Picture: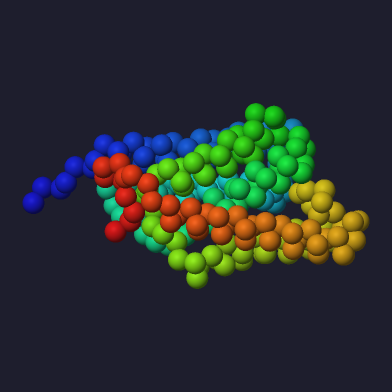
Length: 215
């Protein structure tokens, strides 16, 4: 039997996802190259930022999802879970940067706008409006925690050993108590964000032809 044609809606959705992924990688690559030209191209510092790590994660899951849709393949549940986790982390990135530490960092303003506002906003709108993912089971919501926990531990250890931290609110000079409270607050914010993302996966919207939950 001849292979079925990929519905137009799926092609458009997959193309947008893949395009966003490529754009994010391009922005990160340009920013790193800019740092290298100024003699500050330490990859452990550059990718030590939660923003940059989450942007890479998001680009990866969006790109893979886009490729699967373009090939008219089912999006597996594990990939939808990874994507939901990325959306939850992006929400935290947007809230923390724009609500608590706006204008900080050495990146050009337009780069900060893309990574701290544009990408989180796109991720949320895409998650809500495009039905290319399943309802995420509540028992899996805890999966958003291991990566940020590991990131926090590594950052706090680096701060104690070589003095480098990506964000001022994680400076060792603040003391153990404030650092513990800050860490717990960030994890609580992430869990609340993930709860919202998991709940949004249950919203039932009219489906465009050919764009639906994974088989």
